[in-house]
Image 1 (cartoon, rainbow, N blue to C red):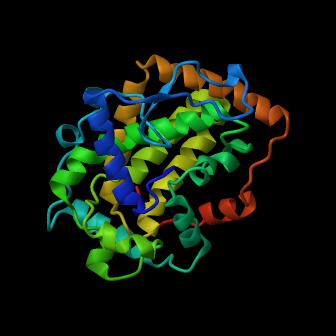
Image 2 (cartoon, rainbow, N blue to C red; image 1 turned 45 degrees about the vertical axis):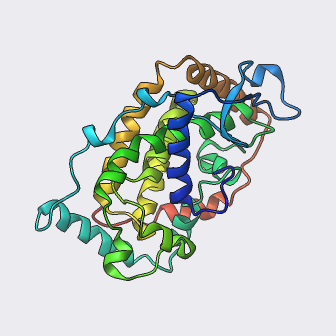
Length: 294
């Protein structure tokens, strides 16, 4: 994410989720989230609290976040058909190591901004950054926190071991493996974030709904390809994302940012603001299927 770069992604997610809980209980120092050079029409006038310098709070208060421990079932039990399916998808994912799909999974693992802002840039056909599309950039940063928080309770409770711990094969993010061993796998926080982003962006750009949902799905499946999540982690992550997205609809600041993002993304397409990604390579990678995934 934006800062906390001394920790791998999974611990940054947990640290920010915990910080958000604290934020809801005490006053935070508000800062204006208006990038230099942006126009008033592209920015909210209300200040956005920070969890720590450079990291914006989510939209939802702690008591408005869906409770994953209440909502999701326990992870698949030993000997169950669901666990057998998890293991079958794991074996199919291992066969993709060394392919462009595996390389894309490594890119999808990066939740740090500004890089993560471009996750859906190819899908939308525009560049997304703090200067050119500030409302969209803010929308992604803030909804990330809400989605991450929604998976926290079950993740901490079940402490499910990740696939690479069982199979001994490398992941697409080797520098994160030591941290991931102590970070629960179920539900997937990355998947929840990507699915929330897909749903949020369909609200802002409804004409791209099918492509955005497909990209959100592939983003989540990258976690299986990366060898860091089971299929059931992915399904539970999508479920928590859906609940989070539904809850966001009641937040006025969220609705305002969606409306602003819709305007600025339309303008970006009109002005030919092209993505800063290799979209042909991304499309080719996404075309490689993960057999058996649900």
